[in-house]
Amino acid sequence: MVLTDEEIKKRIVDELYWDTRVDASKIGVLVDGGKVTLTGNVPNYNAKLRAETDAYAVRDVIWVENRITVLHPPTIPIPRDEDVRLSVIRNLSDDPDLEKTDIRVSVKDGIVTLEGSVDAYWKKWEAEYTSCNVRGVCDIVNKVSVVPTMQISDRVIAEDVEAAIERRRNVNIEDLDIRVENGVVTLSGTVPDWDARRAAVNAAEFTKGVINVIDELTIQPMVTVSGRVC
Image (tube, rainbow, N blue to C red; front, side, top):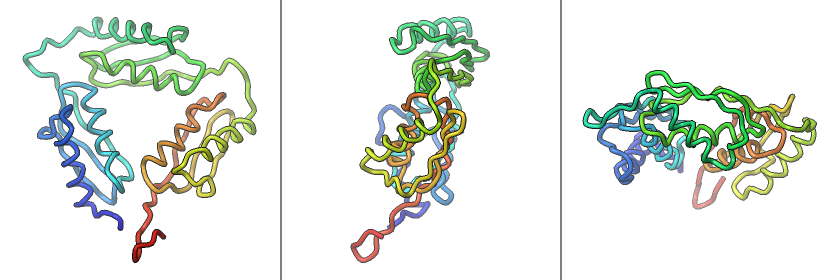
């Protein structure tokens, strides 16, 4: 049985209040057709991401739009943009997966912009996750491009992505369509929940030769009727 919007909202609110890493009293939750909008403010960028993760953890959530604002507590000094930039650069340098990459960092009013290039698609997002741990970060604009060190044909990429998805226990490859053009993978079709969606997207993101992943998947929850899954 698919949850109603009100049931989804209640479960998200319960999840946020359960999570001691998040101050749920400052976060608003709206749900429309399984699509969630988060509003309010949190003291740091990590808390913003944690709230989004909590929302995605709830069954029958289709999508989450995170409009939460990072509002630093007045009792804590806000680092200068240059200090934030240097801290982000230090974090990137300390990450063994990124030490040989060409990533440039600029910061304006706490908004971090990442530019440059990496040789694998997943490293683009690794750079963002690594940067979000720095105090003073309000938002991240990720402009890093992906430049693989070797050319791999679209056909081989498509075959590798399909094989990787087939190994995922919660994704039915027959419900998906995989298209690859110039290293850009487009996934469409239906999956039963967010975990399956994330598994399919990860399968594409971690595949060699991929330079971008376009997620057009639709979450179509399974409906239980008379004790049977249909």
